[in-house]
Length: 384
Ligand SMILES: *Cc1c(COP(=O)(O)O)cnc(C)c1O
Image (tube, helix red, strand yellow):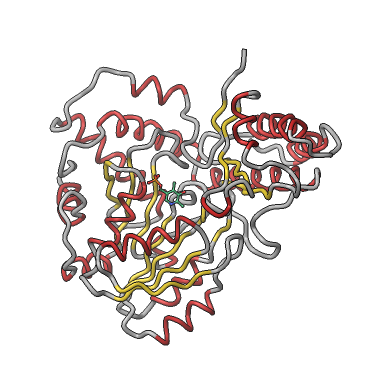
């Protein structure tokens, strides 16, 4: 028998109480009961995004909200700056080009970040930039970007700042209004502990005004329509009702724990995982001196090992699903997710399966050392 665990950077594990809520008989979405749920969810989402402005729930994976953040705020030929150092950030550039935006890209190597100062220079040299698009947590490399720093660029200008916070919001400190983020995106299957299928998009007043002038084509993802619907506690189209019911339970669980405690839990788990991996000689993809993301850890495959095999062995022999590297990082890194429904026990589950896997692919290390390191730190930090 092999017991199964889902420890990828998304989708993430779903708590049993949410699964059982989602197994209840379906209700109709044009009913007072469902409107109450929409209203409750909206208030709770605003608390997580730390905003007074609307946070729209879309029936789509995270990329749908990324697309909406292009099509709803720009016109054909709009100049945008995309700041990236990984696959997900680059996606903003791809969507922008697909919709006919004039995309300027500022890129750093995978594992690094882009400093706010560098971005400021590009921004100053291109006064027609209408919007800056970037990542908070780049899930392809496990690096966290300086969103507060980027917000200073667009502050007091006509330009808006759009942040993909899909593996950050609801797990890492994020203050949409305080920091001055205009459009913030999150996804259900990451820190929100429910299956894929919903995305969330917060829209500031400044972004709302920009939306009125935006000429790109849009229909399904029409945020103005969704904001109007939200004001009436409903949705423009038939939403993923079951997921929205699950979200209601998830947000209540998150509210009970408190966003500050959630952020601290993610930080401590991430610190323990990073130290434990280093204790057996592994290196992180996040370069030294760069802030690592607290929701996932990308680990370099040690020289001489067949990295492509690691996620498959770990899943099929030892029951733990993690993720490999994407594109040019395929076989060069593997990625451990530690966001959403995670606590101390997940750390030990992941490390024991990883040690067994590393032994199988021929890595030399002291057996049990990462687990020993983790357990010691768990005892010292026991706050869960
Ligand atoms: C998961 C993820 C996405 C969205 O991907 P979907 O597959 O469309 O949900 C976007 N950005 C980041 C940083 C992610 O981690």
